[in-house]
Amino acid sequence: MKIYLNGKFVNKEEATVSVFDHGLLYGDGIFEGIRAYNGRVFKLVEHIDRLYYSAKAIALNIPISKEEMIKATAETCKINNLSDAYIRLIVTRGVGDLGLNPNNCTVPQIIIIASSIKLYPEQYYTEGMSLITVPTTRNHHNAINPAIKSLNYLNNILAKIEAHNAGAEEAIMLNSQGYVAECTGDNIFIIKGNTLITPPLSAGALYGITRGTVIDIAKEIGMDIQEPDLTRYDVYNADECFITGSAAELVPIVKVDGRQIGEGKPGSKFNQLLQAFRNLTRTTGTPIFE
Ligand code: PMP
Image (cartoon, rainbow, N blue to C red; front, side, top):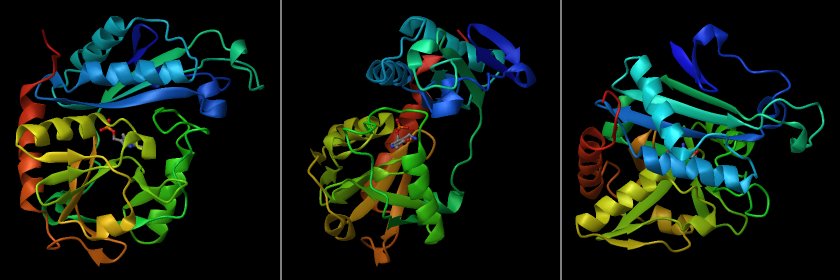
């Protein structure tokens, strides 16, 4: 496996970073999780845009242009001969000293890994998955803004641990006002009648690329879209519920906090959205082998 490391492709064993990198010492850096399907990188431009927005928000100057980053990402798949891949793109603050001061870090480290990921068992997609609401709230905007895909994922990891402790795979995280924000690594949606409903980004959700894609598909198939503040009551009383993420794609949710959602199986609107999403992933994107 070849890893992209600061402009060069190196063997996996040689792809190392310093123990003084602030990405390691402080979680000071950003990342993206991207999928490639059928020889194309899905929504690559959108992911790279979000990476540069995250960088701006943490005042990190990525030393290469967006165009170069797009090319490097596609080339990492190409050099590994991958038509289908899960791509992890990381930019750290770089090597500094043991103090917090980011100004002592001179060169951000750019790492691109193209590999595979198997997130959830197939059964979750066919039969549905359960969620549980956890006590750890989503970061407040004035702390680490949830829109920043930073290397400091402890907020989400704590919520994941709480979900596992309660016997669930994934958690609903509320924001500090008690409204539904998102899951630990996925956005959340409910369906009521012909309306697709998801928390607004201001509630503490990540600007999910899959979220945006699903909203576009729903508009195309004639659904209404709403982004109100949502409570758990709204989720419990939904006709259908599902979560979205680049790794997980769309996962139907059939139980939340012990309450059955809708008919307790993946719903017809969900299946329609999933079908359309899968068609899109296999037919659009930035070509890898051209
Ligand atoms: N929320 C969080 C906290 C995430 O980390 C992710 C990505 N894994 C998502 C939502 C989904 O975003 P995307 O569809 O862009 O992968």
